[in-house]
Amino acid sequence: MSSCRGVAVVCGLGLLTTVACGPDWRGGGEAGAAASTIEVTSWWQKGGAIDPMGGLTSVHRQRFPGDLVIQSGAGLSGLKRRALRARMLRNTPPDAFEANAGGDLLQWVLFNGVDDAESKLLPLDDLLDGVATWRRVVPPAVLEQVSYRGKIYGVPVNVYRVNTVFYNARIFRRFGLVEPTSLDDLAAMAEKLRGSGIPLVAMGSRDPWTLALLTFECLLVAREGPAFYADYFHGRLAADDVRLQRTLQTALDWQSFFNDDHARLSWSDAVDMVAEGRAAMTVMGDWANSEFDSRGLRPGVDFGEVPFPGTTETFVFTADSYGLPAAAKNVAGAHRLLATMGTAEAQRAMNDPRSALSARLDVLAPGGAALAAANHQLLERGALVLALSGLVTPRYASDVGVGLREMMSEHDVEPALHTLRSRRILLH
Image (cartoon, rainbow, N blue to C red; front, side, top):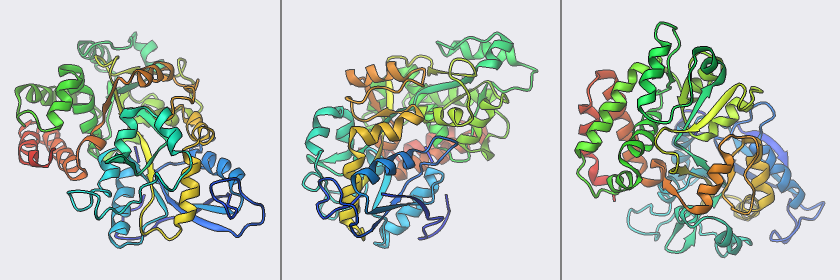
């Protein structure tokens, strides 16, 4: 889910491909039309043959041959968000940018904290052909997270399941481990690995959203159910509810399952540990499929993917979406690119190589991922629970992540509880 640290710079602008624009951007392009450069900020990265932005631009080139799409250097999502924020506040934004659906995107619509009167994004309804189709084929729970007062402000391009476990199949076979179906299974699995030097759970908490993913989007949902999770993060329950405290303690106890250096590693480093056989499993959103695929590892043979124990019928989701800044230099070019992103053809090109679900229900689930078909069925049924990145404000998520990291370093739940109490006012 995610490089350059900086104040207001665009790092590593890289030409992806040349791509479509005739005088009528709503239709097909005209060969020979004047070139139009469109800058996109995204944390999508190319890995081996997996190139989601390349897939998008290939489709866009066929529609609008005169467009040139450049990607502001891909990297970890947290760093990209900070760089984007600096540019948005200086009114020097890219022409389009990636954000998680929900609060991560809509913070720019509700920039004044009240309504859309000072929105830094343009609504797309009257700008793009295809919006009427999105309303028919995108699940309402997803479309709601890119909309405000009935206006659509972002193009949802995929849907990821956050509450997922990936494991190294060779380690499982070697130690006689089986796919966990309950939280109690984990302690028995850790016991089988005792003395082997192989941690049960690879964790990379350098960016502490990974701790929040484990603690809230996985453990809390598994232990207390999706209704409790939603009620808690809508501020309907006490910040120190005893059920929440029990979940924090469980997450702290799980630290004994982690690699000792987890505070120095990123989420992708943790996935690498599993891929390379240095850890048995990791808890991560199903975007991790692309990390295994890029290494040529085979699902069901080299690695496995299962729902987080206790959450089989609950799809905790996030979605990548792309918005159009009101201060963009090339608004017309952004119109064209976002219109392409919303098409079934482009969503297949972006998502199939990564075994990711399209945000459109009329695009079939990719065949490469073990859970893709089951996840698509949950998506069709609307059995969706929004991930924290969309449910809470970026400030709340950041502060709570820091509290969880302090909880782990101090071996005490109180730092996390203190943060949850003090930041409750930020919930809505």
